Length: 110
Image (cartoon, rainbow, N blue to C red; front, top):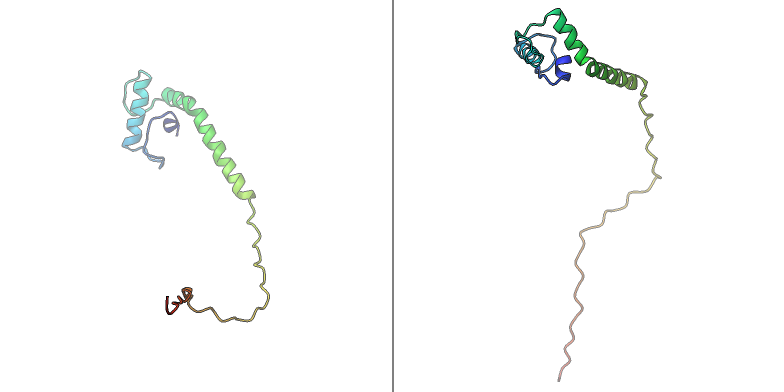
């Protein structure tokens, strides 16, 4: 986690020290002027953990807050749907007809 918080991509956290983790360690070692072996000495491990401590603490606090929030949240009570009054079924209207044009009167003899 410390490598990730310090900007050294590890390809995710699966608990395994794979090639991406080794490369991230080597990159961290280069940045700190050490030989990029991909394996940490005890002193380098302590330095890395110290450098990443703030990010790790922030992540742990966020996880704790989320756990606390989810454990205290109570599901809302179901809302009962209002009951409609008994209304008899009414026939549905048929298709709407367009309005008729008014008749045109032609006057004879004009």
